[in-house]
Length: 198
Image (tube, rainbow, N blue to C red):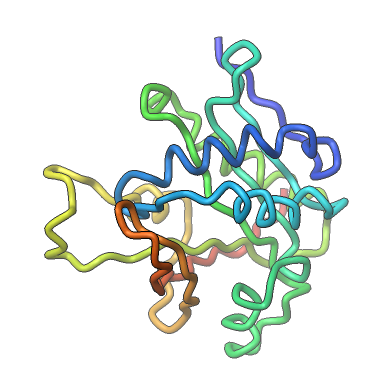
């Protein structure tokens, strides 16, 4: 039985190390190919844990965290994520931003991806002042030889959830790829959705 618990940032602070380890494990695979840096992960997640209005949605199998999803008011995020909205004239105060969702492979296909979105959207509505939700995702070349055979991107899933791929909103984030300790610049594309009333 998988249990899902939505926790505020301060409530989830004691789980930051476990979530950091989970992110490193999941993002090692395609399409992120992230080598993993525990210090970076702890610092990244500390932004969320420090915000009284952030959200961690954690999936537990017993005492073990097997999935995690985060959200935060965009105004509490770092400049790399805020600036593409400013360039489009979208006030950061209008946006609730979704961090990445991570789930161990053996727990996929059980509806937890939808649950992560449901919980974050519900929370953003409850805060009562946001006009949209948003996230970004890394893009890889279609002919990248490292792409696993039969890989299906999440675009169709996100589109069914009402998110729209933005053709002119990107950010760039550096991370080292598997087998190469040198941080490389990666382009991430934003997806946006109006936040409907409850």
